[in-house]
Each structure stands twice: as C-alpha cells, then as structure tokens.
Length: 339
Image (cartoon, rainbow, N blue to C red; front, side):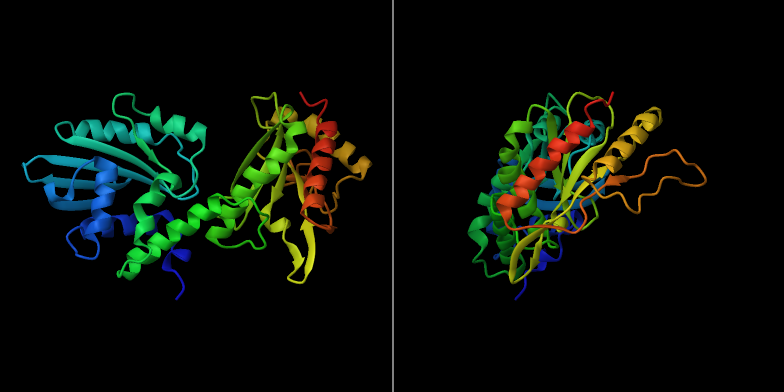
C-alpha cells in the first residue's frame, strides 16, 4: 500500500495529523505516541493529563493545544509547523498574542520542522523570545519520537512514522538523485546539493554565496550562486534539480542547464545589466535566444533570464560538477565590474 503522507505533503496535512494524534491521546493504539509527543514537547506525563483539545490557526499559529491537568492547572502548547519553508519573522507576532492571552498558564512553544533546520534559521527561532524561547524540533529530533511506531497497528500512525524515517534518510542523502517530482525527491536534492556539490566548489567559497531550497510551489529544488560583497539584489546563477536528470532510464548521461538570472533588480542597475547582457552574448558561453528585451513598450527593463545552457549533456556526475565549476568561473568573470 502506498503511504498517505507521500501525497499529503503540505503543512496543513501535518497539522491535521498532529492534532489528530494529540486529541486521541486516550486511544489504546495511539496513547503511546501521543504520550511521547507530550513528554518531548512539554515534559508532562500523560498520566497527569485529564483532557487535550486543540485549535488550528489561533492567532495564525499553526496549532494551539490546551492540556487540562489533574491538579486543575492548564498548560498551553503552541506548535509552528514547517515542511520546506523557512521561519520568516512570524514568531515574534505570535509571542505577542501568547503573552496577551495566556499569561497565567504554563507555556510551551515548539518549532516543528520535518527537514533540516539551518543554523541561521535556528538563531531566528530561538531569538524570537529571550524569556521563553521556541524549542526547535528538526527532523533529527522528530525521528526518535516516531521511529519506534513503524510497526504500529494503527495504519495512520504507522504510515506517518514510516514517512518520518524516509524524510530523515532523504535529508542525509549524498548521492545524486535519479528522479525529481516527489516530496522525498526534493529532500534528496536539497541534501545532495548541500552535502555533495557545494563542498566540491571550495575554490569559490570565498567569492560566492550558495543557497539551496525547494522553489516554493514549483516542482523543483534549486541551488543559487551569487557573488559576495553586495547588500542588494544582483544577477545570479541557478541550477535546478529538474535540469540535472538522466537523459533516460538506460542512459547514464545527465542533462544540465545553468541559468543566468536577474530577479527583482534595483532600477538603477539597468545600465550595467545591459552591458552584462552584451558581454554574455559576445562570449557565446550562454545561449540568449528568446530573451525578451522590452516589455509593455519599454525597451529597458530586467529580463528574468539573460543566459542559459542549451541542450547540454554530460557523461556522469563528476562531469556535471565540473560543468558547474566551469560556469561559476564564467559568472564571476562577467560580474567582475558589477557595482
């Protein structure tokens, strides 16, 4: 049977599962996992709990849980749930609501993410409230809670536990993926770019910033390369997972496309962008056919894509990484006069 959570990959689906598990804390098949979750998040034993209720999107917080304890005290648990997306300064807003409405109760705040949490994101999460910090549960902290339930008699719990194990394995991946298109595939690509490709670009670590993420609602992961030294948006390179797939199931060669992109550029940089485009066209390193040079009657604006590789294949993974190195060198050469 295929796993439900291979299809239900959005944060709302995960919200629903966590609420379902917590509110079924007294079910014989679920109380073990519910108890483990409450103990991990709050340090409270399930035997001390009389009732658990939950709400979705209270003050825009993904999950708000109220635990009524046997000593007539109340504990409030708040869970901000993520799959791919980053924390984007919303926790401070949530803290203001929590402080206003929940002053007299025990408060527990969890940042729950079924992915790797980068150090800069963890700093933002923990820095949102110095007095009562949000605790970070990344996939590494979530795995031990659910791993033991891969043999559960409850189908939903078992499949979520299996999903968590598969997610963890994907976030540890170092091999170039063969596919692109599923939640697990995206996690494998993120891990591959981060763990395998970027370390092999060490000669450019001093000159470039590297960033890897799922492309929002779009069906691919990308690695961007951007010249260091700027506090504004500048042109960058982008390598997408869907552009690095095998030619076919029987052909070990890899497709590759490296895109030279301009997104959300400052208007004052239009003149030097025009010079950059001319350099790229003269060099022949990137294809530029089909590039739109005017929009809504205006000839000077920023095309989103100013260069790309056209129908390029490489013989294997090593050649793919070498091609990325080669084009980072060209990118830095083209960008040497950018101010």
